[in-house]
Image (cartoon, rainbow over the protein chains, first blue to last red):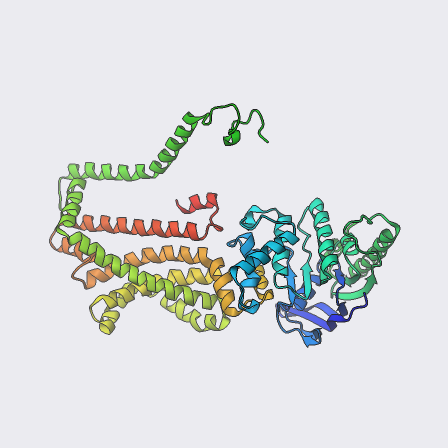
Length: 278
Length: 288
């Protein structure tokens, strides 16, 4: 897992101004995402982890600091960095197949024949377990299925890095478990570099090679914890083993400590929002 | 797969006859027809009331009988006048509307999308929107002459605002995630506008078109009354000048009917193009 860094953040700061007041959302963020790894950004609600992900995605501008992908400064969105949003951002006027094919049909994708596109769409839908759903409309799918389509649509551009913003946060526990296994399978078979935002400690441990723990207000990366659980994990069940539970305790302590300290200074509602899952 | 007491449509293949509930089906059809007719009751009531009043008043200059008005429509239809009037008026209204639709949609999308376009046009729109468009007729006649172009221009000037403003609001309200998703898969500005923004704002664009169409007919009448030798507005004015009240009513009813047809056409096109937006329930709400 000692791949070269693909994305590097050095001293990234993000401030928002509203009504003459300047709020620091992210402060001095520095970390690397390494080639082929699964890195999670773990933090309480409101710590700015989604904002950080959107900055890396090129959708939000940073205020100061340096952010590069493969040595080049990130200035805007790119097909190299695919994004899966918390809410499935499917176009409701397109069928499942057209949603997935959207990335293929753009000028940036080059010319492809209809047959090639259809075959590629079939392949991607097969990959996420939705073979035969080509002609369905997004409204006709469950939340989990929509998110599968989103992932397939995101993979259509074959991005070097997959950025995921709490993609399973809106799903029920049962579906979330299934989707986590599916994501593990996808990651472990493709080896695609993935940056995953979550507030769920167990989800972070289950999926990740490393977990970057963030603190709130202003958000900063407090510690990066290695997750040394053996891979592949998608077939096995290890949420109850000793190592897993030890990691869970450690991450829990890191988050709890943060909630305690932030309550002493400012923003009392952050305590309630940021309460880590038991 | 097939439960024994399943009395829904999936009962095919069981021992029951293929069409177990023909009576229920007939009554469904009847109920649907009755539902449609419900909207016509009020219209029939209005016509009856009119006829009764006309017979009571007995003054055709004030209120001619319904039968006389429809007789006038028929006579004008047979003589060819009505067909020529409808043709001339429809041509003007539709040409003006089409121009307004193209310009209004384009400008509305650009203003909704780009702050530069918004800043440049916003005050101009706010200033010119409330200017009564019938007041433009003299100006347009001076500029474009008394022919068709001045009439079409004034209709465009009126119909463009509801289309533009609705399109603008539609573009402003597009789900940010859709824009972001298109951006992260590498959509160019033009691709973004064409494949995402236009589709996402289409329901609002078409609701603007619906308003624009009605404005087009309203302004058309004024334009035809000021300067025209053919058209429904001219016909109505002619009816007033010759004390032919039935002809005035005939013209008004024809305009109402034409406006109705085009309005329903836009509603039908909207609910077909924006199937994703008007789910069955909403579709019925829109059609009311």
